[in-house]
Image (cartoon, rainbow, N blue to C red; front, side, top):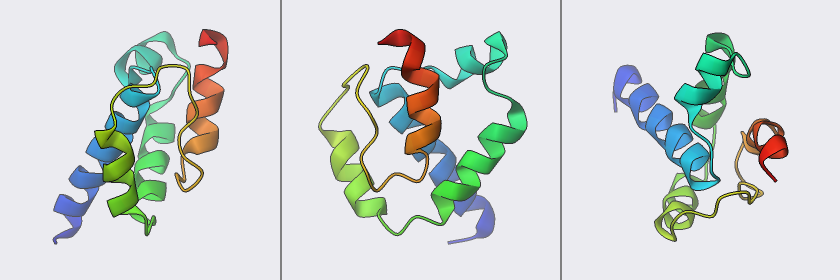
Length: 87
């Protein structure tokens, strides 16, 4: 997989993970709670994850707003922080 394709894959995974736990990354960015550089760093963290298969399986179970991302997610803390006010 090319570097660009890998980034696109992980950007999609990050967005899907956020959506699954009840977050809209675009809304978070517009509100100023999430900066562009934080999104970039989150995608890069995601590219270093060895649990892509487990991620897909977890995401396939459907939306669970207000829940935490799974333990293996490298962006779990960021997503939990963003989701704090929604609990």
